[in-house]
Image (cartoon, rainbow, N blue to C red; front, side, top):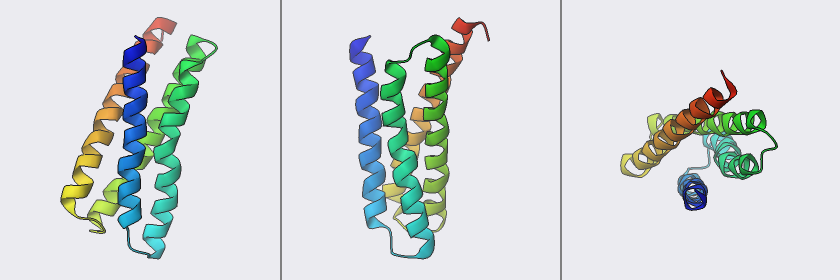
Length: 121
C-alpha cells in the first residue's frame, strides 16, 4: 500500500510539473496570465491535499480531502481546455496533459466512491 501511495503522490507531483511546462509557454495576455495563476493554484493543490489526506484523522476527513483533490483536478482541466481551445499551446503539448488530468480524475473519483462506501454512503 505504501508504494501505491507514493506512486500516486509522485504522479500528482509530476502532473504539477507538466502543467508548469504549459504555463511557462503561455503568451503574456490578460487571459493567459489569469489562467496561469489559476492553474498554478489548482494544479498544485491536489498534490498538497493528497498529502493531507494520507494523514486524515477519520474516514470522513479522508473523503473530504480527497474531494478537494478531485475538485481542483477538475478546475485544472477546465483551464487546460481553455488553453487548448484558445490555441495558446500546441495540441501535442496540451492533449497529453489533459489526458493525464482525466486519468487522475478517474482515479480520485473511484477512490472517493470506495471510501464513501466504507462510511455507508
